Length: 323
Image (cartoon, rainbow, N blue to C red):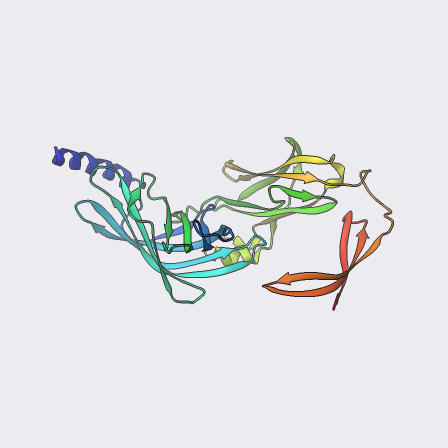
């Protein structure tokens, strides 16, 4: 009976791996949804850590099977942890191992030995967990496993091999953002076949096309091997004053050259004065005196001058005086 189960499972593994890459080094790219967390975790009483997006590539190299598992190693890990404003928060390098198989149920395990910003090496391990049915795609969570203070990553990756994945991101507006006046709608999109159109819809109604092809050196840095990543930005200015106060759905639809489409959504809350466009505000200048600003854990105080801008339909900082 045990031998029958092993033979049946060997057949399942064969079908799964039949769709995988051929023998040899395979370049993988991290997919949207790959995240990084470093900080204090439950059950300790501490602030909840924020998940940050991770981009980059690695090589997956076959090492051969044993009676139960097919083994691979990860080399040339080159990842970037990206902040909310698109800045690079951490640089990750290193190597790792991946195995897929099992005796009764399909299982997989990912281990990573990584350097974060050139510091001491960290070992992250998923443990042997169910999964792997979508291989050659890899989707598994890894962690350092230290009580309270931990490092966790949710890894989602797929082979690049010339079939560059269709990846998109809406950076502004963010879901739940409060908006008023003229604010840009922007993000980026990548596809090996090329991006055909980027379109804007508000509350389900078509608004128009968003210009595509803006320079994004940060995206190029995050995906250095992706063709034309430097010119992957889309952006347009939008006057939220034309919308009624309250909640609205912003949807950006991105279509590649093959007609495949992805949609990005964000709910925003419009805050506005009465009238669609405000030409005169009294007072149009206001000072915030002795205002405390904390940056990187250091707090300083400033006098800040705000002025109303007819162009952006909002207040802008025009002067900052250190105290």
